[in-house]
Length: 366
Image (cartoon, rainbow, N blue to C red):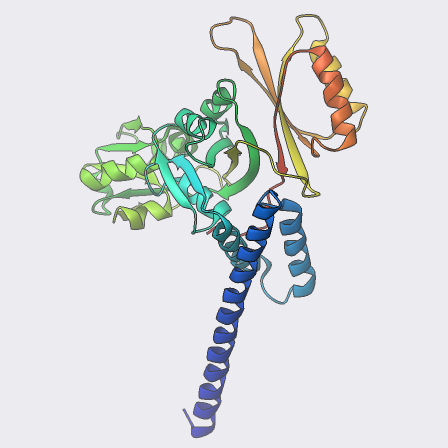
C-alpha cells in the first residue's frame, strides 16, 4: 500500500472512530431521555409502552432513510435501541417455551430485544398460567405455522386462561439437524418438538428412512439431549448450536422454504392504538342453522377484514366448538365496538382476546 492510500485509510478509520464515539454519546443521551419519560409517566400513572409513538418512530426513520441504509438492518438496530430504552424504564420478565435456544426464545429476543429477563417454562400452558397469575409480565407462544397450521396447545390454553394478546411477531424458521459429532452415521434417534418433526418429515423420510423420531417438549430440550447423548440428533435452532456446543450435520432440512411461525405476546392488558392494529376474539355460536353465517355477516356489513378464523372443540363437551377470529383494527375503533355489541347479543360465548399492533414483517430476524 502506497503512502497516500495508507494515509487515506488511517484518516477514514479515524472518522469511523469519531462517528462511533458520537453514536455512543447519543445512545447514552437517548437512554437518559427514555428514563426521564418513564419517570414522568409514573408520576402521571400512564402506561410505559406507547405503540403509536413507536410506530411513528419507525415510519419517520423509514422516510428519512430514503433507502440509503438497508431497511431490515436499520429496523433491527433501532428495535434494539428502542426496546433497551423502554426496558430501562422498568425491567420486563418474559416467559417462553424452554429451555434456552428454542425458537420461542429467538422470537422473544426478536420482539423484546436482548435486555429483557427471559424465563424458560416447560410447557405452553404453563406460560399462560405464569402470565395469568402475574408471576411474569409477558409470555410469548407460537400460534400458527405457515406449513403445519395452528399450534393447538396455544389455542386450547386461551380457552382455560384469562390473558390478553398484546403483540405479535413472525419468525422465519430454518431447521438444522445437529448432533455431538457432526457425523450423520452416528445418529440412532432424532428428537425435536412435534412441529419441527412435522415440518421436516419428507426430508427425514428420504434421507434417514431407518432412523426413528421422538417428539419432546421443545427444540431446546432436544438440543440438550443431543449434547448429552452422542447417538441422538436434534432438529434445532441456530442459537441451540452455540448454546449447547453442537455440530451441524445438515442445515435447512425443512421441507418447504418460506417456513414462518407467528408468535403472540401474552400479557394482562392490551396496548393502546398504534394506527395499524389487529384484534382477536374467541366466540361460541348459538345452536341454530346459519349461526356462523350470521356472525360473519355482522363483520362483513361493516367492512371488517378477517385475517383468520379457526374452530377448536371444547374439551369435555362433545359437538361444542369455539371460534378463534383475527381481524384488522382496534377494539376502540367505532366500527369494531359496534360490531362487538352485536356479536355479544348473537353469540353463546364472547371473549375479546386483545387488540395489538400488527407485526412489522419487514424487520430482519436476529
